[in-house]
Length: 245
Image (tube, rainbow, N blue to C red):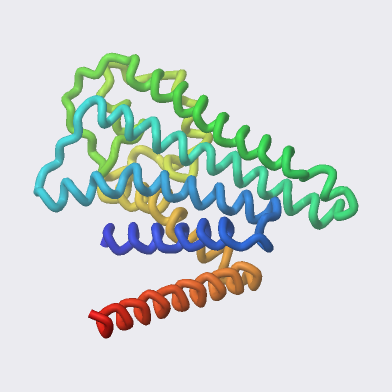
């Protein structure tokens, strides 16, 4: 199941990245931000799924302390940067609809690069803050993380203190995942919720942003025709070589 989801995410986001990069008609602010979103989606899902699949394949459940720190940091980095980028994308559409005459001025190439860089940079600082805070507290309640990847609430349950005020902020990024009474919390429910917020968005984002986008469809069709022509050319050259030999 995870392999199928991961391959779908890689394929969908990879096609968007290739289409936007190769088609000069898509070198616009909207598609520039969409390319960044696809990069973040690929990074987010690649942080958790491959390790989980490897553990399942080898029938193990281990992850090193350093690996857990890195996984938590990268997951928070990509997820939070994606939220910031979605805000930038919303601003891009607002300007395009409400202030079309000022679009070129407000969203020039320099401004787009700065906004994308701000999203990535803000995600990095946010992830660094919460990663350092999470692993600065002593952990004395075992080493079993009741989840398929390292996430803050599960690691906090291993801490020696019950309350960690500095980590309240992270729940405001992830309140949809944790806004439930502790009495109804269960490992199976937590697993389902984690899958919904960590795996589903990177997989369905390519469909959401491309299924009704004719420009992107046209770019993918041209890309497909280009690869088909290149494959036919290579096949023809191979046949010619075999005839000569």
